[in-house]
Length: 307
Image (cartoon, rainbow, N blue to C red; front, side, top):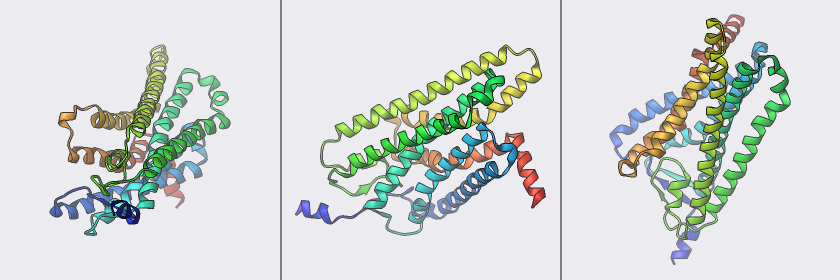
């Protein structure tokens, strides 16, 4: 009978963002605004960097892919979360849950390595400006985005398949989206092999991407300190400011979520941190690049005058 029940079950129940009904309406309004700003901002950044001829550089090529990734994983999670704040029964089908997990893993890992590629781009631009166009050719740029996409897609499929070929003993996910860790707690069989895969690759992704960013900025700082003019230093810092802000916000959130002591962990804290990097960061990234970047603001002004 238990085996039959597991066979016919074709959907999961999500606990949602909050257990308090009185907070659902305010959360719906807040997260709907955040999601709409994220969609408009990231779509606008993609269109702007594609249309404006002065933004056809490697830096904005990577920025366009960062906007695509932010749009991808906020849309992967956001609409379903908003629907669950309206309906009484927060359910998600088996297929949709697997799809949501796969796309979330793929987009999240891609973002880490795209940020690394952007740091490398700034490093080449500041440390070797005369060789910049040669080193950061169109072919190199495509390789630096294609490898993260292929790697993250492969790892995403591996993790998703390993989880969903295993039998589930429960279908109540204590989160507002289908994450790998909440799903692992529902499996009947041993999860040690899947946990090791997630642990090893998560550590590799976070450490390798962060180290490459730190190495790039170490070289950038050394190059800036060797500059004689204050104007040159200021210009070099300004080209890195937006990217560095995005890196600090993302890795600061991840550090808060995963490095805090287990004793201080709570379901609500984890949900709020998850909301921040699935909804808020994709909204902040285009705002940071548009508000802190003179070239983006100039492109927006040109398009506005044309319209």
